[in-house]
Length: 88
Ligand code: HEM
Image 1 (cartoon, rainbow, N blue to C red):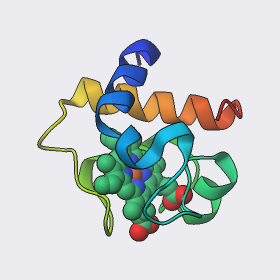
Image 2: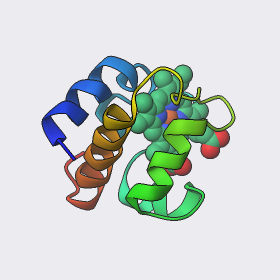
Image 3: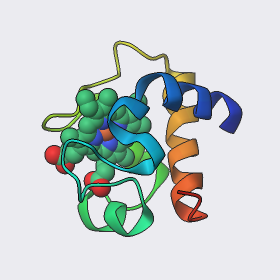
């Protein structure tokens, strides 16, 4: 997946609640590796991120009808890369 596209999708759609990999709604549910391992349904992997982005969860909206499959794949790969590399 395209990490440059993923960064653009993230900045345009996700940063409102997840600026810098944080979570302004439920503070401990960040996009950092340790939080994803603890809270993300399905564990710390691209598929689990893709599922949550597509379907939403709780106060997080679903993106499956607003982003196309390439945009979702790109943003999931970007979040995984940022988290696995401790880039935020
Ligand atoms: C949780 C990604 C947009 C609110 C999460 C998690 C991921 C994620 C991977 C799991 C974090 C964890 O469990 O530690 C994204 C992406 C977005 C996006 C890639 C853009 C496509 C948003 C927006 C909001 C939001 C715009 C606010 C309106 C939340 C909330 C949670 C969450 C409240 C916690 C859900 C729960 O476990 O109850 N997000 N998010 N997200 N996100 Fe987002």
